[in-house]
Length: 600
Image (cartoon, rainbow, N blue to C red; front, side, top):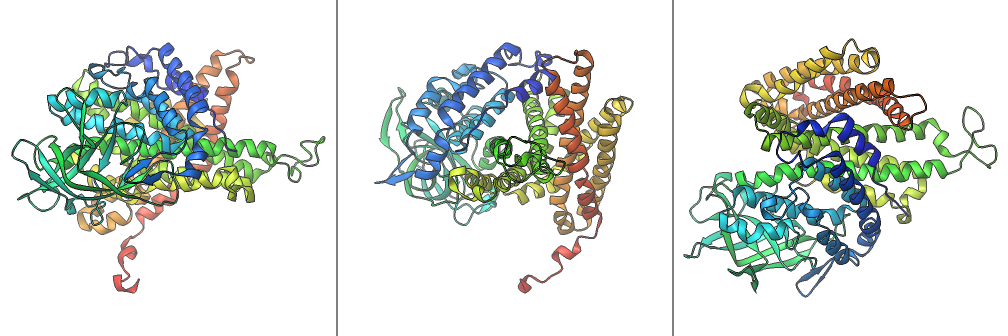
């Protein structure tokens, strides 16, 4: 049976030592996020997901959701756990205090989201989508819409769903055919079919608030003609009570490879009452408020599955007895040695661990930047943070989910044949990890967004911002003897590759967009490796300085020494992959599109 324990020591290291959250007290919300408050959130959140949520993971996978007489029912135990989640106030952790939230920084919410997803990804999607819907209404909704919906969404009394995709309109939302007809009273009647709607219906909450993209009659073709509407499952009266059932019904739920504990619905809207949110024909602008957040959330899902899979693989490697260590007997009192003494098993474990810890640091740093981009009192700091968030969002979504899947398969490999058996839980991690690579914009689309939009935006300001940050950090720490050779030097080499690759990609895009697009995934992976290498170098600097100040027998010593050893593995065994991606970018990419389409 799989298990999970929240990596609290690593969270503490990142929050307190690396990011020094206390230094952001001038940013609204951070003054309340004292070390004691963060510690309480982490400790109590860990207890909740370990005791209440994690036991649901295999139950949800085994039972799945049930569709009966037009109603979707979550697996056994989900309703009680969701009620407990709501009653504990977890969903309002980062919510707006004006609507009952606690107002803590989003970076704290990212940590809770990772823990919840590691425990049970399917469960974590219900509140995750609810927060996203609330963010859109808070940012783009009218005062009346905020009064009607926000407090209940923040409290998770009601939940949310995002209804975008149609059979003919996936990545290209400009192809949406769902219609919105003005009713003459300020509302609209929504008619159409949506597919792949996560949490589109269930029995966890009395009302579900759908955000639906639709086209008002007479609107222009393409993306510019799409508007966004609030479509509640049940209409809401002026006093906030629930009224009649709206014309939004579930046609079916999909039979899926994984993520069985969360329903993926076909939603049929037949004259459903909808309320325009934002301005007509600007629906994509409004929905990207949610998509940008959900793309970061998808990346955290990849990280979270990697963590859960790694923990179980490490435990199995410590316990599984097979053969003897190549360097001599490691466990003379046993018939064989634990497989953790085998170098190839260590290679897989260290690959997972060094990705996970570096990725977690990057995700939480970007979480701080998200808060700064929205709330920092100085305009230049806001713009700098927003530039970095915009650049790194597609990287986190694509690279983290790719590696979440890779880590799940590595963990399964460590289990050997037992990893192919359901009881171990490894094959569920592999199946579940496949989903975040596909939704919220498939990973190839993230690479296209990075190269086609983010690099040229504002005359290349976004990559210049990140490269400048790297250059400043490298120059300041070249002379630090504790990290210069193992960390700063390889980071400097990789950063130079990134600088050259950025110039090459931008120049190539001006001549032939296909050539630039063909190299986009290599560029995304190069940028991801450099970004994680940057975080590892920062962590190594902190760990080395802490060790200088600690006595040899201090109980915190192993944490910092392990950080340095894990970081060295990343810099020596994973960061060198930049050379392969760099070579692919420099090579002519016209061969990618050379074969005629009808030859496939």
